[in-house]
Image (cartoon, rainbow, N blue to C red; front, side):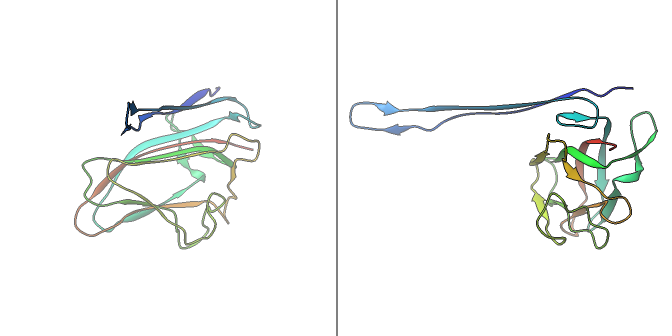
Length: 168
């Protein structure tokens, strides 16, 4: 079984301002492409998890990144390094999707502190990419819990999650 992936981030924008003799409209075309091949080194990964999940009002869940998640074939995967993480909050959500801040065994190599949380707004997306050989390290049993939470008690939230990582 082999894994290959391409992640593309693209932004096309124009900022305009009327000047005396013309309207200035300098365009911005910002594009980054990350290509991942099968393996465990630089620009490589060999494991992937993806799912669409719903959390009821005020609910939380901890995703155990080392030995509990299953890939699309139903095989349990153990991640040692995360190379890409994508969390997309459904646009129909009323509440934010909170990422990070597990109470214990926090996976925190991607943040500065165990209590750090990223708020993903409805229709928003969080993307982390670490293509180097180290990636974002996961330590089974001690630093492997990724907390996802619903920010409020009024309604449920739905989110998509994609994790690409290496087993070693």
